[in-house]
Length: 391
Image 1 (tube, rainbow, N blue to C red):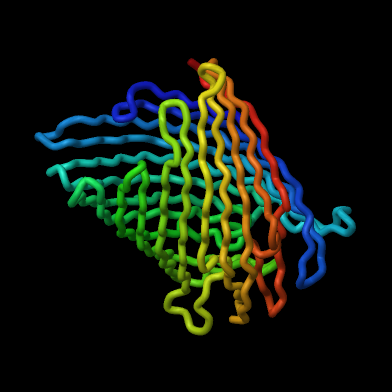
Image 2: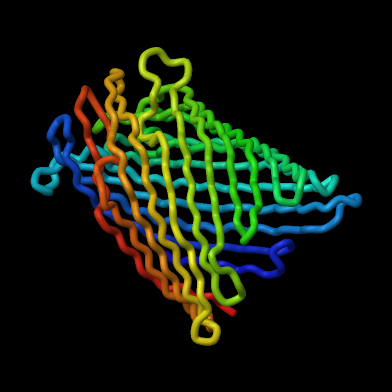
């Protein structure tokens, strides 16, 4: 993966451009808990893209205002193969498809402060996506799909006193169909819309501390479910409701060093709408807890050593099959750590790690006819890399 970022100007009036290219190739073997059949999935993906954003900040008719405009471009070139295997030796091929997906988007956002205690935000985003599938097993089932989506957003923030912000937000988003798993079986499926609402408060406390509390709800046009080894199924409309409690405080904060503690708690209630029988949505933890530490230190007359470590704990989640049989996966913890050493000349070294000290089988679990299948997570994953910031 290669990523290039270019930024010029101050944050309130900057121009930022990003370009990236990425290659991924992986083979994964798995065995169905229902049929006992072992399969191998091989995916190769090249992703290229670029995006840019420009911000203007100033006065508009005597009001403080900010205008942000931007655009995104992305192209995915994917080859996907799936075959039945025995002892990792390939047998019959069940999926052999290539597809290209292109996405182009443009967006605009305006913020104005008609009075000192009120900030209004409005914007919209336009997306155009196109997917071209070549099904090598069944050439006649090679769908071409595409669509356009507008996603508006609005919000307001009221500041009755300097230490308190009250806010409300509304926004829309979408998900494009999966080219191999969804489009081949249903070439007429379109983008699935998501509608989100949020209201809450941000309290600024002494010692650069903050407390944020927000209640939110998200509605989705189509909740997608896939039983182990089965086809994707549309379960209809769904809704998720939750509350986020987030706090942060600085133990140390000056020009050369900082140490911050942060924590959050988020209960969630996820249900299917207008559907008889079971209502719970699979794989949505009923709550999550996060606690961690973030630190930065100037060293060696200009270098910077920084890092983050945090612990997350996810509550139990429902596992429901298409027949309405239901059980629950266990709660589980995850520990993540990141460290970065930035040289004053622009070179940077970084390392990241993720560990599952508890139940590695609980995060991804599905059910079919009363049988549970899991996708166990690696007990430990590590990543190291190099970055360079051009001066």
